[in-house]
Length: 197
Image: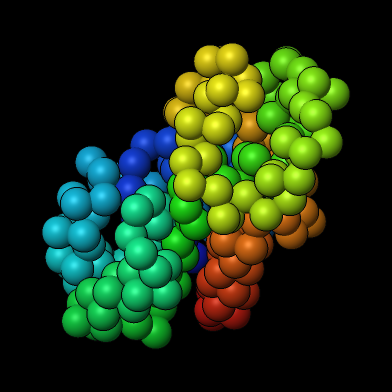
C-alpha cells in the first residue's frame, strides 16, 4: 500500500470524472489517488463519517467534495461536513470543499475550455449582457441548466466533466470555489510529499 494516498470522497460520479482527468495535469505522480463517489448528497452525508473512520491507510489524506445545491449557506454546509470529519477522528488529515452552487460552476467560469472540450461555439454567440453573468458563476442559481442550454445539450455530466477537465485553465479565478478546491488538493499533496518514505 502506498502511504502517499489521496482519497476523494465525492457526491457523485461526475466529480470523480472531473478529478480523474484534472489531477494528472498537476499532482505529483508518486501520489496514489482513490475516488469514492457516493450516490448523491444524502448518501455522502449519511456514510461519510464511517468511510473516514474505518479507512485502512493511516497515512492517507482526504478531500470531501460536495455541491452546495439549494443549501442556504455554503459555510454552514462545510461546517456540518467538517463536524463529521472531526467525529471520525480525521480532522487533521481532511479538507472539505463545497462547489458553489454545483460542479458545473467550475466549467462556466471557463467557457473557452467548454468550447474546446465539446467542440461547440458559445462565447461568440453570447450577447455582452449575457456574458457578464458568467464573470461570477458561483452566484448562479442552476449552473447545470445554464451549461446544458449553452451547449445545446452537448454537455452530459460524466463524459462532459471528463472532457472539460482536460481543458480547464488552472489559473482561472472566476470561480472561487474551484480555486479553493485546487488549493485544498495542493495542501494535501504537500503533506503527503513531506511524509518519510
